[in-house]
Amino acid sequence: MPDHKFLDVISYFEKLATEHVAIKHGPFNKHFFRLEFDELMTGLHEEACFPAVVLESYTFTLDDARADNGIKHRDGAFMLIDMVPDASDLDAVHQTWEKLEEIGDDFFARIQSEKRLPSSPFRSFKLSSVSATLITNEPLNTVGIRYTYEIESSFALDMNPDKWDIQ
Image 1 (cartoon, rainbow, N blue to C red):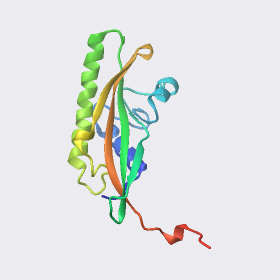
Image 2: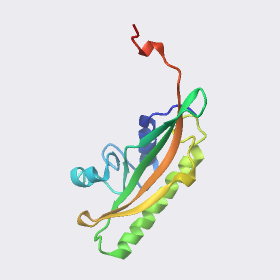
Image 3: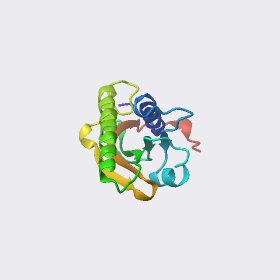
């Protein structure tokens, strides 16, 4: 369980957004963002292409696991967001949620299938850690699904003397 950093998670989600055929993120079609939902909806709404993948920051706790390495238990979240012509049209909202749920299923199927690759930041991923919440922003005619997940990574508990100026 190597010590993957948050930058590895960012790169992985950007790759998913770029390679998924329903999203197709790219430099001129921005479908991937690293920020919070409110920032996307207020500041970047004009720039965003939909459906969009919004990767949020994460929290983590540390555990010594009674071993030579420490364990970081990371709780992360991302959202899949799309536009609807009218957020009060429940049929359109439900169809869009269904489409986004299918994309989310595709993401987790790929994460699950690649988690054993050494380069995967999701090596300790358990599908049972995933939770999803449906979201709606009526004034901006957007709906989405917010997914939370848990992953673990290790880090060395040995003090590196090169990183300290001890007198």
